[in-house]
Each structure stands twice: as structure tokens, then as C-alpha cells.
Image (cartoon, rainbow over all chains, first blue to last red; front, side):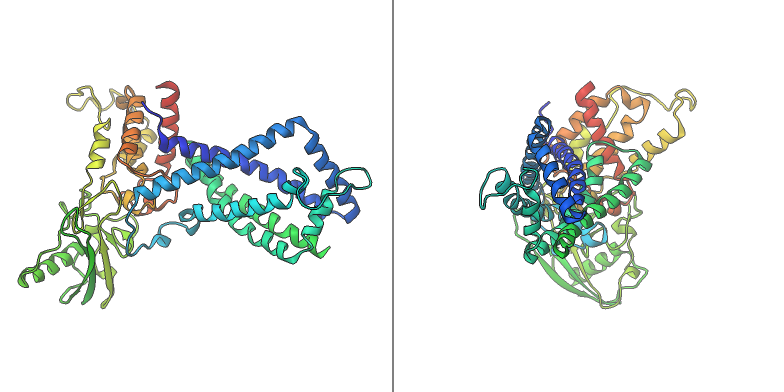
Length: 222
Length: 247
């Protein structure tokens, strides 16, 4: 029996998606350091990011993360192409609003917005700090790379603040549908359990959306 | 009452097809939707025009033949209902009602509103049955089955194969249909002997037929006349994994 593509692709998307969901929790927790008073935030944030960069374990997780994002995107693209082929002719009138959410019908579009965000976000931080592209990043008093300065200066540009905040909306929508669907895709079919998963998904999406969306504003107003 | 029908007309599988408008007077609110189409067809006969081809059989909501897309929804504006159970009282005088055939690559249009749903039959042929002869119904207590288990199997067995799930799904996924058929048999002791083979072969056929993948929009369970729960799809996914490991 050949590989069952319908299930294989979805399983990859769900598994990588859930891994990315865990990553986001860690990411947002670290971002909360930015809310502390400036000097404490600077030293904590910089020493935290130095620890991450120097830990071999984190290096493995980082490669897993790159791999997850790439697999998530590639398989989503493959699925979208196959799904479009499965419905070549659209309805003249389609009232899909009455039987499903807009988010669930437009995960590809929302995902593309998030991908655009990731590209800009990586250019802002990853390319500068890890690849050394653009302006050189200085050191703080403790001799750590001053990632705090990179963050703070970026979030003192109102256009970036707006960009980061607005793009937190598609993130929240994507997480809400993705989180609860991933469980079903991976074969979790306990009725009450799924209801709890749906509630957790809502809370998780709100916390992530508000968290990632509001921190740039707080940094801007500091 | 008077309504304007905008109906998909297509001579045959190779014809391009288009929407045509028909103003129909003399309808009553008590008429079923199919009776309204019958009425329109009678008017077309009198005008010596070709009648609109649409499928039906029982007209009592159990055969699954009468599936059409009405005003952007499978089987019309109500949740969990077949087209034959829809009545004109669900529309207002002067309404425009858009009627289209199911849209899916795996359900090609034969004529007007009739599509070829034999892809479902081929999925059924792959294992939605029990190979052993079971004879007449056994004594009721011979095989004890917990009520919960039999209820779940019966709920899945309620699927009438109308194709609304595929029609309404943006990916034309047949996951709800296939999962209902699989869970119906795999949940019961009689079906267990062939459970892994059944899952593997039916889901593989689903892929060969060109149905898309399930992305859990949930539209199917809202449009399903039998209210088959989307949880069946999650259960099927678990069974697919199980069949890969143990099958």
C-alpha cells in the first residue's frame, strides 16, 4: 500500500504546527523580559540571548525550528495545490460564512501573512545578530551582544511597531484554528477532550496575539 | 408566491454550462423545494423547453439522492437537512434562489444539477462491508456490545452518502463520508477482523478518487443531513495511524 498522502501531509503540518506552538510560548515568555525597567531588561535580555546562542542543545532545537517552519510551509503549499485541484470549479454563490469560520476557510492566506512577517522579523533580528548583516551590533556593559538595543531601537520606529502589532492578528487567528485542528488531525477523538482543547486553543490564541501584539507598543512608550 | 430561480444548466459532461434565470409564479409555501422544481419543469414542458435534470428518489430525507447547492449552501439554508425536506416557506416571496450542482473534481456533472457520485461507491467497494457470511440476525445477547459503542456505530451508520460533505468542503474532502463508513464497522466486533485492511484500502481509494484533504473547517457536519460528527474524522485519523503500526 502506497504512502497515504492525504494523511501524511496533514500529519506533518499538524506535528510541526504544534512544535511551533510550543516555541511561541518560550518566545513570548522571553519577550516579557522587555517589560522590566530598562537597565534590568537590557542585562537580563542580553545574557538570556547569549545563553541561547551558546547552548549546543538550543542549537539542535533551533535547527528543528527552521526545519519545522520549512516543512510546515512546503507541505501547506502542496496540500493547497492538491485541494485546489480537488475543487476546480467554484460555486457561483457560496455562503460558507453560515457553516464555518472565516479563519478555517482562509488558513493559507493567513499563513502567507505570517510567513511575510517571519521574513521581515528574521531580517530585523536573525540576519543582523546571527549573520552579521546590516549595522554591527554593539556589546553591553557585561560584554554580551546588545540584542536589547536592536529590539528597543526597532520598536522606537512607529512603522515597525504597527507592523508587528497588526501582524499579531493573523497569528492569533492561525493559532486558534491550527491548535485545535492539529489534535484532530493527529487522531485525538475524545469528545469532551476536544471541547477542552478548543477552549485552550482560544485562550492560547488570545494570549499569544495580545502578548506579541502589545509588547512592541509598551517598548515604544517606555 | 413568486421567486426567481437561477439554475445551473449544462447539456452534458463536456458542455461548459451557465446559470439561467427562471421567474416562477404560482408556488405555495407548503411546496417542498423539489415540488417547486417539478412545477418549474411542468412550465418548461408547456413551453416546449428542455426540463431541468435533478436527482431524487425517496423524498423523505433518507435516500441521499437530492443533493443540490441552494443559495450557497448544500441542501439549502437550514443545517442538517436534505433538499427534499426543504420547503418554500424557508424563502420569501420575490426571493432569488441560486441552484447549482455539487462541485468537486471527483463529482463530475452529468447534466444540469446531476453529478456522478460513483466515486463514493468505489470507496465503499474497498471495504465498507464484512466479508464473512453472517446469516440471519443472531440472538440479541449472543454478542454483548456496550450501549455507548453501538450508539456510536449507529450514529456513523446513519450516513446516507448524499455527498453534501464533499460539496460544501472547500477542499472537496470525502473525510466525513469515509470516516463514517469506517467507524461504523470498525467500532463493532463483527467488523474488527478486517479493521486495518478496511482503513488502509478505503482511505487509499479516497485519495485515488481525487478528493482533497480535511482541514477541519467543520462545514461538513453542519451540512450533513444526518448530523454525522466531525469527530469521526479525528477517529479515522487515529485508525489510519493504528493501521500503519499494526496493519
